[in-house]
Length: 459
Ligand SMILES: Nc1nc2c(ncn2[C@@H]2O[C@H](COP(=O)(O)OP(=O)(O)OP(=O)(O)O)[C@@H](O)[C@H]2O)c(=O)[nH]1
Ligand SMILES: [Mg+2]
Image (tube, rainbow, N blue to C red):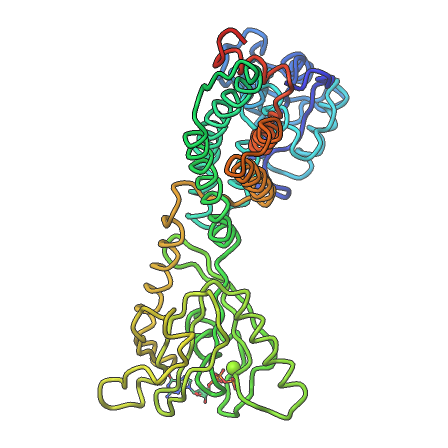
């Protein structure tokens, strides 16, 4: 709990800037109802039951009627921030919004800082830090999948997982401390093998959560897809066909595209960031070489590569080793009469990573594009539901998990090499602290000793 903070009453427009049918001003703090009442004509807000709305009139800072409005009162602790909250819905004119805020400030509120409502929700214990961060992610979510992951986190699934890991670590830590306390009496509370297997299990889980970050981040920000292939294969035509827009220049001149052309599409629940790139070929043109360099870098950034082959002129696939998923698109299928030829011979580093069969497409007629889109959606869905039930999407969480993994690894190494219990216990505590930092509750020695007393009777 954030008890040091002075909880003055804050206000802000919570709807997006600009004109809208309705705008909502939110007021939070122990004087929220009193402040709102000063600019309110209508049923007394103090007498309004919690979670109830009432129609009335809001007044400007001169006391003149400003707009007809609906006031909703949420009493502490059953509100978003945990404090008393009043929401005033007014007509969404820019003038009304600005005059309403001016009026609330003259009535005793202060303009809220960015994120302050959610921050108060965190400090009043309404949610932990990971949940508060998820609120920001929900607001920023641009695809159904990004929204779904953020919702899971806001509802506390990720936090539950972390708490359960932490509790098991506290168990472990407790056994280690007991051994330390009684070491002279030669009492064994748990054999080393048992401690080791518990620690290893915890490390595996921490590592799996950390490993989900790449997928989680890609789904949150848009999955990077690089369109790669030789010149004139139809990469830019494919980008345009997928976007349904003349985004990139198309021509039959080899080496048309020089720069990476990027745009986003939505398929199924996912957002993809498509990158059209310069065709791969050996060239003496200095600018084209720079473009090809950029293609290779785009391929490195990508989670999925669409490798475009010209079916009328198939060449061996030439890709540097990559850990991206590779989809092979056999383009210009409209020009080959019979069933499309099998995938051209590929270099071995790629073959192993291209389990899906090549997809015949025509960027010109649009045939096969649905199959290509389905393949993209299937890869995205695999990445989402792959190894983990919750995906890590936040850089801060990822850093903390990585640090937790490092400290538990040291503890495990210590256990297997018979290092002093003191050092192992220290690394275990450090792991607990890293996991706790994600939830925002760094355990003070006081909290830890409370937790410990629950587990270690008589200590
Ligand atoms: N018939 C047919 N022509 C196509 C198809 N896709 C692309 N083309 C033609 O192939 C030529 C090259 O297309 P681009 O999309 O510019 O090829 P690119 O791979 O982007 O080429 P670079 O930018 O030079 O690397 C153009 O003349 C397109 O009209 C297709 O599916 N069928
Ligand atoms: Mg091109």
